[in-house]
Amino acid sequence: MEPMTELQVWTLIGVFAAVMLGAMSLMTTVIMRSTTVAIEGLRGEMIVRFEKTDIASAARFEAMDAKFEARFEAVEYRFQAMDARFEAMDSKVDARFETIAAKLEHLDRDVTVLMRRAWGEPSPD
Image (cartoon, rainbow, N blue to C red; front, top):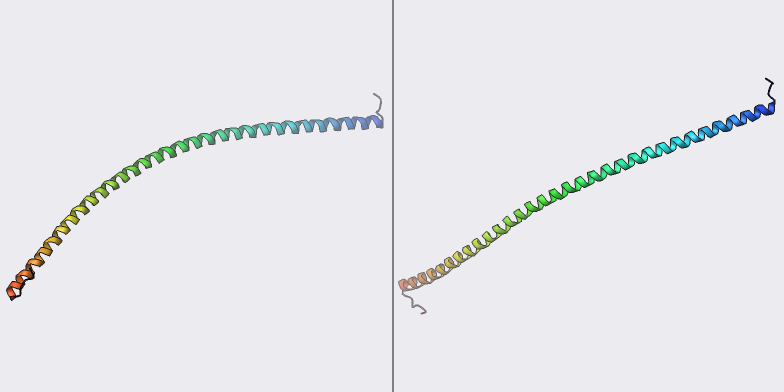
């Protein structure tokens, strides 16, 4: 085998360097693409899981909202019933107070008439 000239050595060094840089560039590109694909796949899976969780949470919140709404309506109905009872009781009490007030007025008038008779004063009637 003949010894290589300096020009041939430098050419081989340049070719070797170009091949190495090309291989490194190719490997970097492949690694970047595979990493990007893996991250996008993970991102997609996470988005799907979060959407499922959001849907499940929304369904639970809607169910709880409906449940509380039904309970609040029941409580509101009870309050309305109590209001009706209080109004009925209020009208009964008012009627009784009016009756008592009328009786007291008649009693006052009767006592006044009796006292005037007892003291001998003439009555205005």
